[in-house]
Length: 346
Image 1 (spheres, rainbow, N blue to C red):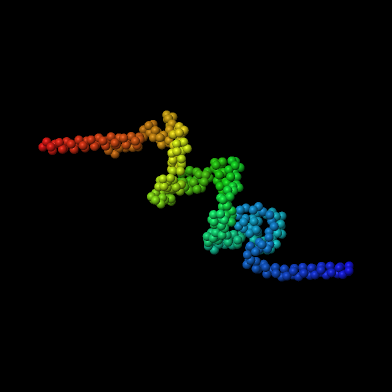
Image 2: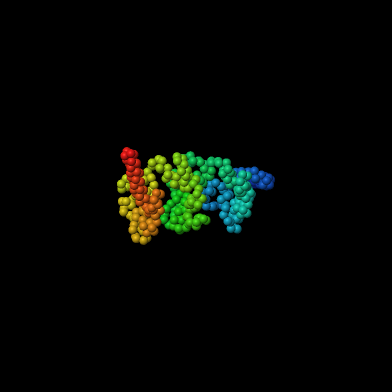
């Protein structure tokens, strides 16, 4: 019995060895043909059959890329040996090598932009085709990238993973945090080439440039009035709708513009933030200070068209015009009466 058992075991081992050698021979025969055929294989299939075991920190955009594209870090010599060992299929190794060589083998036929990975080119093509395969389950908004959908989901979840280390404010996007940091640094990296004024945001500089160009791209559909800033158009629309969303908590008065409410609040608080540099008199509104300054400068910008008299306030001109009109009407009436009286006597 012992001999039969040993013989059976020996037979099994030999058969396994034969099977292994047979498989190895087939693999060696297939390998050269696989080198020529790998260009026709989908990268998704490669990634599934030959998984990469190198660990890396995933970002939002990693979900858009095949696994081997996550090796976009500079490798040390020992790291490269590990990578070389992990990339068991030559297709993966060739793709990975483009990270180091900078080779961009895949070009967009429409715009000529080049990419190192075929999958990245496929993703880029959605820019031209308008394809948006990733849809939000909550609001059905569509996106061309999975990472953009992931960012969008924070609108619904309220998740804000990016925190300011200085004040603790949290943000749903890294870009918003970067913009916020300018509040702390005081940096204004964007300068107007025409007047030198500096801005913390590129968007603010773009809006400012319309002051110089006179461009007013935002038009009111109801009256045709045009504006250089979208916010100004939104505010203007309240003229037509009658909307007054800003309410005074003390007296209930409503306003269409937030700055008007702020100005009104000084009636209740007695605040007078605008001071005259010459006599220290204070005013609750900047316009009142500007009018007052003409007392010191002697400026009289308002002129009477009839007699040429000039005034430092529009109200003074209006009063003068009213007086002149009454006098003129009185003279005209007197002349008319004199003429009638003359004809009656004759």
